[in-house]
Amino acid sequence: MSEKISVNRQKKMPTFSDAERSARLRQVLEDLQEVNKKVPVIVEGKRDAAALRGLGLMGDIITLHNGRNMYDFCDEITRVHERVVLLVDWDRKGEDLNKVLSHNLKGHWEEFSSYREILKILCQKEVKDIEGIPSLLKRLEGNEPSRQ
Image (spheres, rainbow, N blue to C red):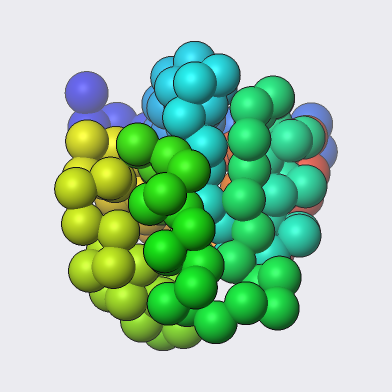
């Protein structure tokens, strides 16, 4: 169906495509919640971790920016965890971090690489970080005004 339902701006009703996007985002996050019960998620900072907690993740969430260099961080991760979910931002800094982490954590993250890629696609160009997902969901669901 290529038609879009028009938006009622006074009631902030979501368009069909917004509703579909939010439903898909919710499904990805529900799947990630299940994985996170057994597998830690690595994020860049405290705000990203807080956003994921607010979205229902209850398992281990590990932040990168905790005073250790990348080599020591990755060394500890590979010693302590068999598998991890890499969920760093998809801005320029996040892409650079993702390259370094994916190289240094080879064999530990690949199984879950689709989560980051799907989130990037569903967030489109509106959000380039994990911490922005909750407000994007609110907007898509008609609970927050658009940023126009």
